[in-house]
Length: 486
Image 1: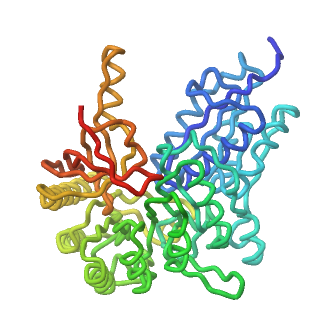
Image 2 (image 1 turned 30 degrees about the vertical axis):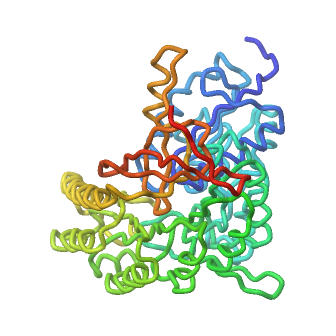
Image 3 (image 1 turned 180 degrees about the vertical axis):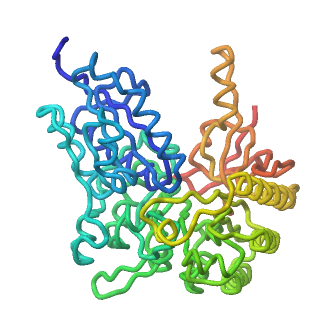
């Protein structure tokens, strides 16, 4: 068996939310500085990392299956280091070593900066490494918060959704403690980052060619930070970041209904770069279920918030999350959620079947008593209703023109490109409107990263289709230049 030098090839798989995508970007940036190169082939990498999610059981099973496939790999690859990082690592800790003895290191959400060192240790000593944060009861709030250090300075452009889009984490952790959710445990107490640091990070991204930033937080509109004697809330932060030259659009997710203040809505209305789009999960349409979930608001209060959004920003799109089949959910309660979907007409909804997570209040206090087939039916009913609403509302755009931030070739164009002769090119582009609707249209791929006006002529429930209006704003120039279609 050869004990040659490790090949410095890194394979990383990310499951879960935007926070995880950003975490992976930061880890890759740090490892590149150590001489690693990224590979898409797990079999050729000597360092394999899984960035995990604990929100649903399916995400965890997927990781355990991947780990299972690596059960015997070390017999032929003595330099192999396998690491599990992120929420599942923070939640399950040593349990991962028990279930998958081939794992070398377990790294929580607050210790990602230690990964390069942990890999070295693991490879050198051939001993298991574990770095995780304190439990929520493992010390004072400050001690626990410090153990979930935010890890942000390093960025790696190649890991982004597109070269023109990047995530900026403005806060970590959560203090809401909804009964179904593991996030307060896996990501620690709510901590907002300093506005000056966020302004610097956004400026650096703009200099790298980023045109759109999405601000991330578990409850992003709860942002609060005192700097130089001034308290910054979300509206103040938007105003600050809005000044960044080169940034064309600012989005932020995920919002908490109770913290949707009027000053924030006025900021969205008055700052031209801020998207007219809010992701504000309702989670359920029945007050009794919301109370059991410990969401902290009623459907009536959510309705008041929706009225304020529609009044202050009339064309604002709102999307939501829902959990179906939560403990004790009756058919009547489910119908109330259906009524809420009809009433609020969300742009889209992310609908999940309730999945019991160990360590949450719901798992400790309520039986998971809804049959899976009932959960499935309710899930599908809600999905069908939401799709019908999305299709109807998208059809309203037919004949209108929308301003689109062009992301690049659409997925189907990329696929077509791979299957066609090398001398031909396809130019279906994709982007998003200011109210975050997906728009596809034909155009020159060089438009990626610019704002284009598109006339909509057709739609599906998820996508608007259109033609580019033959003028677009070229960045770095104040004049409008004609774009000639071939």
